[in-house]
Image (cartoon, rainbow, N blue to C red):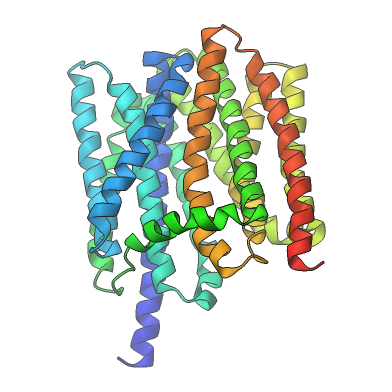
Length: 405
């Protein structure tokens, strides 16, 4: 194959993957507001901890099954298979909803949290297997921006669809987008080499326990990620309670939730584009302090002027900062670490912590609901931010020592 053909196929691969990430995040942006609105209408905000626990358990089961199934299969094939299967499952759930079967909104919530995790995981696993470091530096930022644009498109689209056709019918767009992804994968498979096998991640995950025990930085990173996810989910719980009260109509609530998520995507794009400049000005430690500092400010504004508006601002800030400045600064903390810490240890920290943290905060919220002390959610959020800032201080010292500064 000549150089011109190689370059042409490389360009096709970049465009194809950008189109796939647009479709997938657009589908999720339609599914998430609609499903969350349906869940609140059917079960109420107090049931969120139960469904979050169910998501954590289901994620472990599904990821285990996925690891077994994916060991000898090409990642492009897996992406298409998961897209098609997710679409078929959604169609089945929508049929069950029309028949009036109980528990569908609960199952839909679990479905929307799991399908997107699998597709994003496969997408980045494939990208990591076909792009060298030089190409990745140029294309990964593009994929993030295109994905955010897909999210904005879907979040604005779902509001129009819910208003025109109803929340449940708006979900019919999702299988169309997922089937388009499946077709795109079939086409892309002829333009891209076979992907790496995911089985290697399991080995790294098991070996990560040994690495974690001997690395103070990794332990601190694990606690930092856990605390940030606890705070973000506490904010999410309070936000859902307020959006449920402020917008009792399901279709109107779907539109508002979509607008909030569109604001998150738009803010994420702006912050992603400015993250390099901020890191250059503030440094890693300054950027890590900035995130909880901004959240403290928005949360304090909500405490002084309680209501949906400032809570929505806090929700947007928590997600957008997590997707941009915090993620970039967090990844830079791994740079001075050893190869084993950056591979085996990181796999353990990044895979385990997000799921465990969500389960832990669900148990805490169930206690608050049981004792009818929902006001403690705000107090716990402030406490969590305080612990977050303290962990940043500890990590900053460890980072400077590891980097020899």
